[in-house]
Image (cartoon, rainbow, N blue to C red; front, side, top):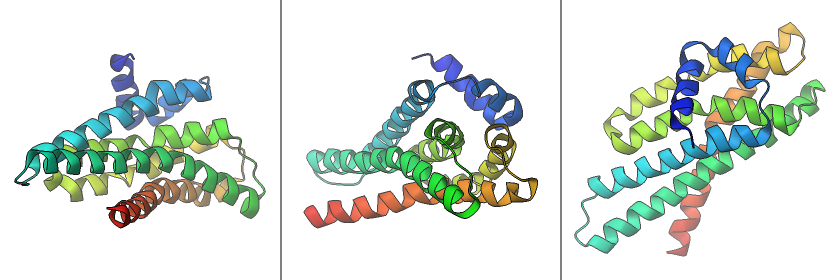
Length: 191
């Protein structure tokens, strides 16, 4: 994995989204996943695991490790599932509400790269939970990132641009939360 290019891509998405989206346009689905989503998923889960491990106040070592590992697994599943659930939701809503067909490669590009702020939030909050509020406020910048990327990938009427952007944003923001809640309840139920 080329982490130098990964961090360049993150920085470009955050500072010059239009330029980043133009560079991303030629990438395939597997490249999006292997060069961006999976590495950020790994870094996010590692930061959550280490943050939970070192901030835990459990008395026994195995309790601390088990708690950190369980929470890390919940986050991995929430983020990974959130990417695909967001794709599914966006594709269905755009198809049914606006008669706009979006193939999986396009939706995965837009959602996978727009997940950058979710990944950064997870990394920051995993290590420094005190910054939770600031990290959640960062999420609204995803609206701008999506606003700039959607016209390059999806043909639509200009008056639908805001609606489409908000559909993408809300699916990206709430899909991981929904999966984390459901999976967390299942984990508590099974223990």
